[in-house]
Length: 144
Image (cartoon, rainbow, N blue to C red; front, side, top):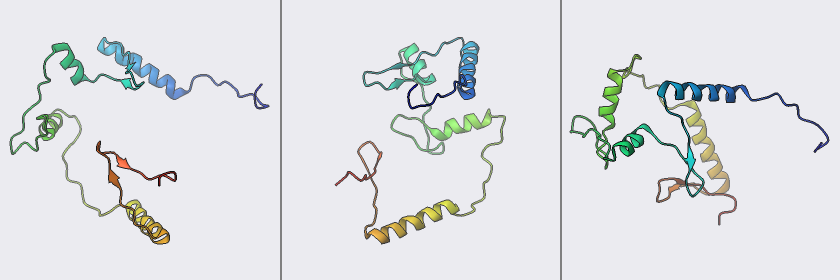
């Protein structure tokens, strides 16, 4: 008995049970068993439908091209607006409905006020920057 007390064993958490049941159901309905693997760095490799399609056909994944009225093309030729239109047309739920602009959320206003107050109290204006990968550089107590 470590620590002077025992911890009761209530069995597997209900969320874990539900996740395992959902995974089993998905595997049964698709006829495919999910077996994720790790890469050399220990990161999980999780295949997506497009990757599996590309690997299965050993060809480039066919993506729609964009025209000026479709939206904006990316370097890969992927057109988000075209995909969104196709998904909206097949959706059983309402999509692309108007949403009123109610202004800036009160949490954002409070956060901006807190930042301003903190900057004033320490005499330093925080100007976050991004690294080459697009992730934010966040200063820590150990940073010079």
